[in-house]
Image 1 (spheres, rainbow, N blue to C red):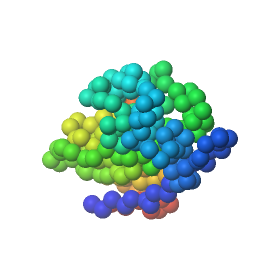
Image 2: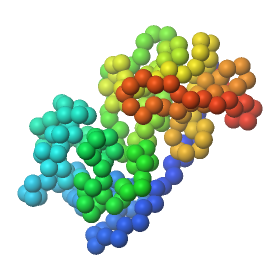
Image 3: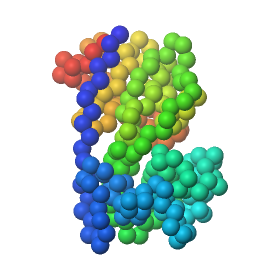
Image 4: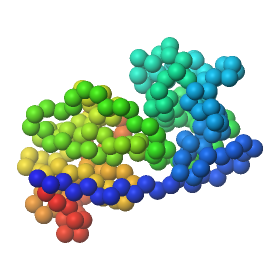
Length: 235
């Protein structure tokens, strides 16, 4: 079986900021602008004695509150001493995931995130290093651009159940969805041209496109039929 991956085109998210501080280059995306605004050249190692730490200037209390939800192993770790990908992950969670979060936690610099989707904001963020095995013998193994961070996520398709390794640590995966039927050929590619991959299955000469669920709970993807001749899908 040959799985064709469409080329991933990442569209730059242009956000206008009227700030009295320097702004990162256009290629850095929204979070690059927040980092430049918050911590400047000190970046991820920023610890100036003002009670805020790291690239995104977390207080210890806010960091621990987010970490308790996202990944408790980082509770109690000073933000500037956490790896870049962990700081990125915590900032993304504070802005878009925890119920009490949002760009307001960066009263000035958060302007770069206003009107930006979580997926678009994640473009260019550091990906966690991979560790551990993922999937089982007999799974269909794919690598897909699921959430916009640098690198690809491991995907294991077992029958019609898709498991996604979002944190790079292997194990059962952090995202699970049900999509397709027995006998389908699983693929992932940027079918709609938005810069991110979507799950798909080839059934006969029809490509059925789906979408990733937006949380840890299991969900079903909604599909629409597109003929392979038009999409260039392969096996």
